[in-house]
Length: 343
Ligand code: SAH
Ligand code: SF4
Image 1 (tube, rainbow, N blue to C red):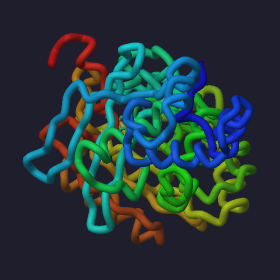
Image 2: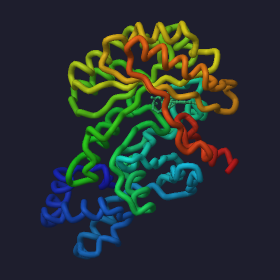
Image 3: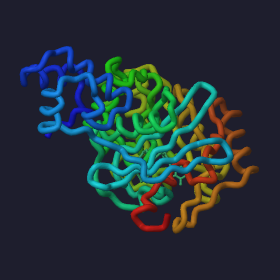
């Protein structure tokens, strides 16, 4: 069966014409998908013969809403979507002054095993197709009756552990024939799979890159992020510099402040030393306390002194506002509660 939602206009045109249908039908079909169609039957102005052909030979990946939670604090919406094989992923829609941003999942679970992360704790099931990532956006847009203008790949999963599908997704979502969300409005977040950072840089996609750092010391980073045992901080920084050189786009470093683990003055000074002179921004996030990890967020005073050290040393750093706190919609809290039966 052909995965229609993962296809570009060119691929779709080829598929359709090879099977004897007019080429302009491909564009028509894509506009239905853009509008959020979930079945071929909704494509009312396509000829019956084409609809019958599609039903027999192709499918539309879906992300069906299983649960929806709306934050009473800031209106952030968290969805639990079910995919065609009943695996579930979560997505979060946040409203900012410049529009709506969606946080998309790229895998069911994650193999990387970061000790502070709920997804990491839930194990790994499978990677998502490009169409399943797109379906998260179209389902949310349809449900909320909005146009989403920004995408961050910061949901469940490690995007660079699903490289091909993620790149396909990025090209599709930014194309005019599909959702038309510009690359400059998309950010990919990685825990630091170094060879993929090079590969990604070489694609010169103009997409934002966010790197989860969480400690400037190898020993400590390896304790919380096992990927660091494979690619250490020096290698990671080299890859980031290469990305910067290739794309000229500022990198964001994510740094979750964990009380007593990575929030001391020594950590702040070493972090400054590491990132000094680099075109980047440091996003400090008080760690979201995931049950079973034992980690606690740094108190307000410590958060403030950490950010002060960084800025006084000339770095660009801010403490990120937490959205959707009452519905566990923050980074690293997306997990498969549903399948554990506690919803
Ligand atoms: N796998 C990718 C993207 C998904 S995780 C990555 O690790 O970058 C999205 C972000 O949430 C990452 O920056 C990750 O480090 C962060 N994160 C995970 N668990 C967290 C927690 N408990 N508190 C704060 N941030 C967390
Ligand atoms: Fe995976 Fe990212 Fe969570 Fe680490 S932080 S376990 S890479 S989702």
